[in-house]
Image 1 (cartoon, one colour):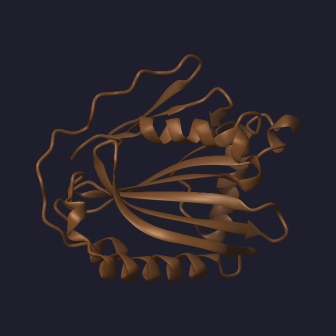
Image 2 (cartoon, rainbow, N blue to C red):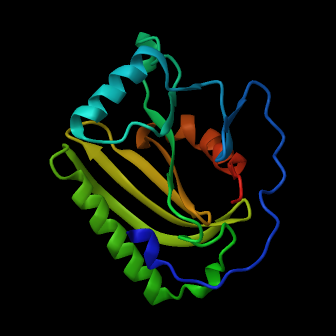
Length: 213
């Protein structure tokens, strides 16, 4: 498993960090035993008939349909306006055994340039392989980063993708290690709609907190 490639020295830190102030009109989305993030009024948690449709598609393709997904507002009701834009916030947690993974505050300075380059190549190959047979293609791969987000250490990968001839989509994936589990927080929206989504997505990321295990 790719997460097991990471071997680092641990540092103690009180986590999670205090919650940010909730912006007017925004909703704080809590996930039991995982954490929370804030969602703007232009988005909604995937539910209802649209979620049933998506989950069924995933089952047919063999994917697990347990992750929490938020999307542009209106899709749940199949409202026409809900199809005018594209944005997703996805949070997936995989649970293993105690001490399978590193802690939320692992020492990011333990990664040198060569190790980061090697990790980037591994994750890029995994993304490309995951696109096979889906109509998705990788347009651009951005340098992998090992960084801290809201006091929590993570591996950050980013790329631009395209589904068939659809508009380009910018994808940012943040992988956090949490003792017996991993959390993958994925933020994506159409590149052409950056002026609409970028500011809110920065706030979503800054609001993200994980319950420490």
